[in-house]
Length: 281
Image (cartoon, rainbow, N blue to C red; front, side, top):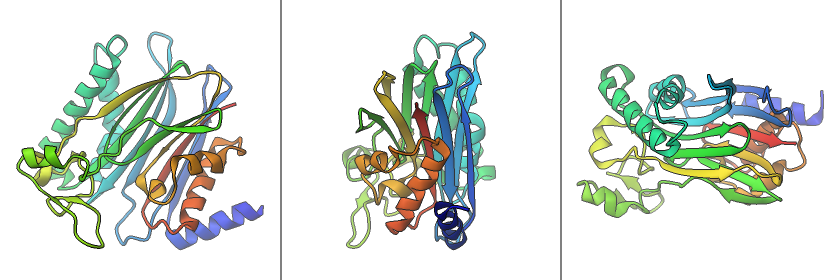
């Protein structure tokens, strides 16, 4: 057992259960992916869920499906998103022709489903960052909340998602009749409760929250090295550039995801942490 593997086992023992996995493109052998998850120091069960897979579409195109769902006030909404969001996206008739429009519609539709099932799913909610890699050539990102997608090209990090912080969307929240607190020693919160301005679920706050995603499209070029999808447990303690720098010499995507979380833990991150790394060799 290597020193890194021993350190990982120590981290898992200290911070709780972990889950991990990896795979690769069936069409493009130079693209691999791996994920890793570690429960934080909170008393509740792990609230994060991950999707990390390649799927063959009916039109012979290959889709890489990647997502981080960071639940709060319970894990049921994040679990529902893991099982249903991509299905709702891909069944939109205009997915291939109007991808961004289809994504926005699917996000709204899925949030409506969650709100309708509130008695079963509970009062909680979830953030989401999703990435769809089409034929290894085009990456479409959508997100609500503060999980993040970052791409690395020629060693330079570029953030592809937007962190939906209450302080940045204060006017929108107030226009819906809500308010944003900013108490000493605490982060800004919607109605004094939620630390993100957009989320799925959260029925009791929904009148003041949005589930409208920000969508971006990025072309995959020859200088693309990696993509990182991660929950805020990493971004609270690491910059985008620090994150891509920490994995640039690790070729195995799964080991890269593990290492990134180990670095975040060493920097005293206490949250549940989920991370996906996509590598372009």
